[in-house]
Image 1 (cartoon, rainbow, N blue to C red):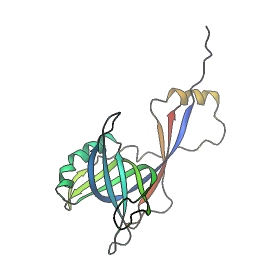
Image 2: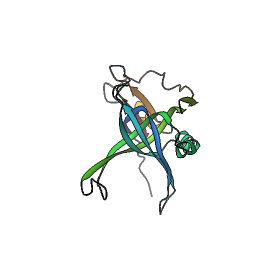
Image 3: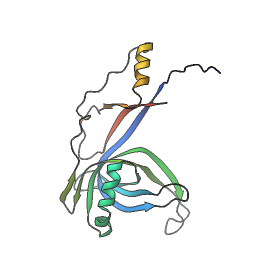
Image 4: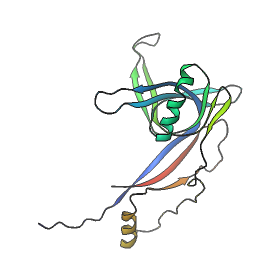
Length: 193
């Protein structure tokens, strides 16, 4: 029985990451019936003027390995009602609509912003730095140029062979971020099909 050789094509994804600073709340391990339990938390992200700060709440599933280790490490500080402030990166942001079941808003629609906590840059507890992530080499690497024409067959073969290490290029915003805004960074990742 002969099988035709099929070339592996890499699938390209566009990642939308939300980057900001916020307070860590509701750290918990979620048990599921089928599958592994996972860590979850809420982040109250700061935005607006420093003298009139506003908050946006993100309900996050902790996805990054180092992020999970850090969330577990600072769970006791959150439970002790200490102020745990962190610099974060969230990916795969989505809206979860719901109806309030009790309270003054009972029966009214609401929405929750959900995402995956991918990375923590630093953590402060009660105003004191407790953790700072090591500098990342890929952050200083230049972005890869976008292809201007169809790739040749040799280029496609080289891309297919390099599927174990996804390529990522960073697209920075045109204007620098200000303390008033959470910076959104788009990245393009190539992963095997």
